[in-house]
Structure formats: C-alpha cells, structure tokens
Amino acid sequence: MTTTTAPPVGVLLRRWRERRRRSQLDVALAAELSTRHLSCVETGRARPSRDLVRRLCDELDVPLRERNPIYLAAGFAPVHRERPFDDLGAARAAVETVLTGHEPNPALAVNVRWELLAANRAMGLFLGDVRRGPSDPPFNVLKATLGPDGMAGRVLNLAQWRAHVLRRVRRQLERTAGAGLAELLAELESYPVPDGADEPGPGGEAQDLVVPLRLASEYGELAFLYTTTVFGSPRDVTLDEIAIETFFPADGRTAELMRGLAG
Image 1 (tube, rainbow, N blue to C red):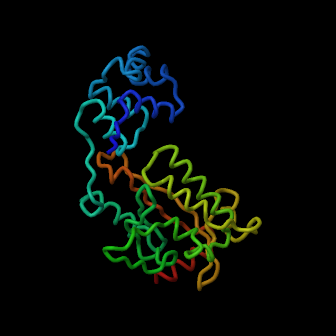
Image 2 (spheres, rainbow, N blue to C red; image 1 turned 90 degrees about the vertical axis):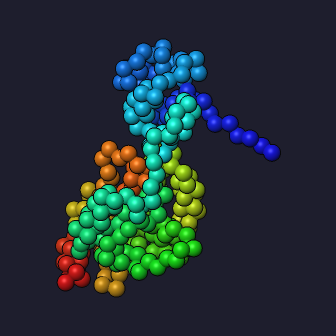
Image 3 (cartoon, rainbow, N blue to C red; image 1 turned 135 degrees about the horizontal axis):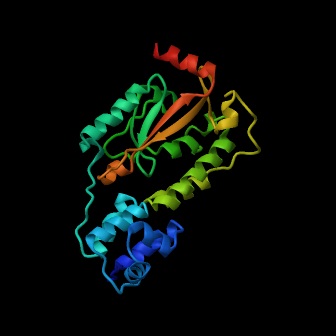
C-alpha cells in the first residue's frame, strides 16, 4: 500500500504566489500582513488563521476548487460547495436567460474542461443536434471543434483557429491549474496540424480586430466573433467554473443569415 501526503498549507500558498509571479512583499502588503509573517506561513513556522487563508486566496485569485484543499491543509473545513449544474437554481436560470436572449446568434455554457453544459437553439448551426445518453462521456466543445472526426473539416481558418484555441487553453491551465485541462491540452495538441497558413476570408474589419471563426455551412461561409461571460463573486465551485461563450456575426452576410434562420 502507498499513502500520499497532502502538501502543507504554506507550500500550497507559495505555489499559487509563484504561479501568479508575485513577490512576498507584494502579496504581504496587499493582504495587510508583514512579509515576515507570510514567510513564516510559507515555510511552516506559522499556521495561518481561517481569515488569513481567505485573504491570501482572494489576493492570489485562487480558483474556488483549489481553495478547499488549502483550507483543509490549514486545519479548517472546506468552505466552497460543489453543486450539479441542474441544482444551481437562480444561477442556472441566469445562464438559460443569457443563452435564450442571445438568439438568433449561437451561445453555449461550458465548464472549466470545456464540457458542454447548455446551449441555445442557434448553436445547432455549429454542433448539430447533440444527443447524449446517461452513459455517454461529456460532450467536449474543443474536441468537437478541432478533432479530425468533428468540425475540423468545416473550420475554414483551421490553422489560425487551432493556434488561438491552444494559446487560450495554455493560459487557462496556467491561471487555474484546472483538473483535466492538461490532458485536454495534450489531446488537442495531438490532432493533425493543418498545412500552411489560412487565406483571409470574410469578416470585414473584424479580421484586424480579433480572430474570427470562419465556418463552412450548407448556407455558405459564415464568420463569427465571440465573447466570454463569467459570474461575478461566485461562492460555489461549479458556478466559479462556468463560462458562457456568445458568438456574434463578424460580417453583414452572416448577420443577415442568422436573422433569416431565426425567422
């Protein structure tokens, strides 16, 4: 039998401080404690209070999922619950309101591993009718987009979009250390690399502002921009990890087509 020992609270806090690339002096001043006290906490010579753990986690922007182990290591009970998406009550209703209100344009909600939680009707233009049984694995949006058996053949600027997605997941992994993200990134990187550079396509001025998603469809070529929405001041782990991706037409033709499809 093998046993694993959880790292001390000071080690966990130091890892997050180093991940954020901040000095002890900077964090100590922001959290209103002395540098010496913070140093003693990190080296195990002092045990932080519950309030100090909270202040340091807030200052270091530690994701809620990763805060619970820090509280446990400090000798306290976990603070943040994790409810199923269906049990989020008003928060889930807010997600559904955003998704429905964004029609006729596509929108979806994902968790930290990019698993689909909910989508509006217009999202069918991207993903089709997603049908999952109780035993099916979660539907991963990025795998479906970049995978050779998914939408990759319909993404007209695949090399450009693939590079953008990989950069985004790498930054997300660096910021959150989210469980499953490293494995997702490795799988995405293993997909075939498109040959050559993508040719410029529709999107007008959007091409000079952001990276659009150029998608082939039965209605012709479409171009979309996207924005990301997250909840402010979440207290639940699930809610902390939800992101709503909303897509907007990047050119007049796409906007006209989306309005027509809604009609």
